[in-house]
Image (cartoon, rainbow, N blue to C red; front, side, top):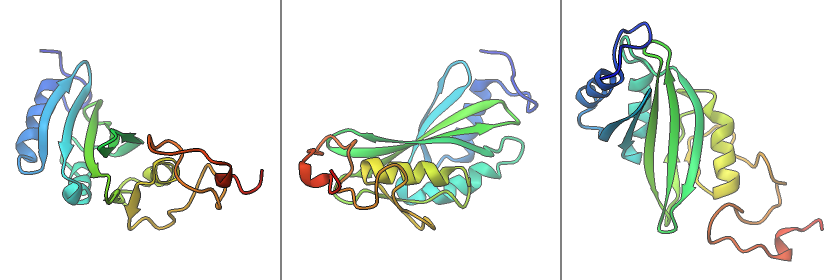
Length: 164
């Protein structure tokens, strides 16, 4: 067992145990990735509610969203939220499975404002829609770009580049 870290005075194992207990119905496969990260999964339908609860978690709140990643696993997509708790000085890696047929998850930019541009980038590059996002539009590519170029099924055609 690693020593306690952060002002909460909890070891990473204790943080994982507390998250597993407090979110028993929502977080799945809670495990420690040493030295300072807890990794788990949440159902996309529960994502927003869990995000609100994680941010406000007494003495252990995950106040900061450092990054939102989108992953193409060919048969499905996944969004991965990298969260940080100042109180425990730990990270939480929250994985959400997203079906390829309807690539959409609820936005969390109202919970963590820093997620705003990360969600826009995931939309732009991978085509994952963040439902409820206040300004979901392209952030890296031109507005008239066709498709989402980081998807594994993306085919780069000359038609995708209207200004070339």
